[in-house]
Length: 321
Image 1 (cartoon, helix red, strand yellow):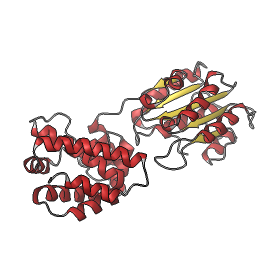
Image 2 (cartoon, one colour):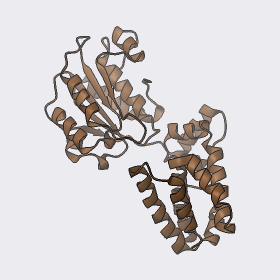
Image 3 (cartoon, helix red, strand yellow):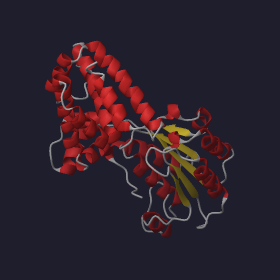
Image 4 (cartoon, helix red, strand yellow):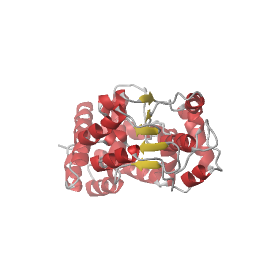
């Protein structure tokens, strides 16, 4: 697991180093940050530091513990995460973590349990974790990662020391991504990825810029000419959840443009397309279709066996009904 501190996390890391140096680090840390912000690397840095045999405020990198951590074979570090992207963190995984928490350290030191996607725990899993957080074993540290504390069990949140780092200004993110890719990046890529630097970089590296542009072009053509339903449905099916999120942003931007607002427009580099959609679709239809889209997104997440292509076609047909 990569353990490093990105520039936008320096301030938070310094706060943690101070607590580590004073032996005041809470037994349960809850770190809330968007996907693609680098929170896993920051959590790994904390875990590696806690487990290090030579240093207190940063890992030495050379001791047996640090070497085992870098090789992903540390016996006192346990990483709990969902079995697959979008799945819940199950109660069995949490119970296994609780068992680790009470075991004796194999290296005779601290133990760390990292809980990824803590906001995806079901009620049973959250309650199982809560019991251990309420009566924590000695020399055992929990690091919980989430995107939203609001969707977590409040009693679990209340047992943790909460941290929510600020993301850097979008222009700083843009420069960081461009420096890593050695290429210019549209500002709307940063906004589509909610200002998360690693997500924006991965967006470009995974070829999503071309997919997004193709989807945008097909959508404008469809609402303007009433043609290309199958092409658009196919593009949406291939883009999966990302494509639906892009259209959610797009329709919200169209609503703002129709109202004459330039406030927080995500598709800031696609003003021509926004105006084209705004002319082709009346404001009440944009609003109703956006609401229907958000409902469809929730249904597809909750019921994975649904015929997504059929549902997408029905939703798109709503623009011309």
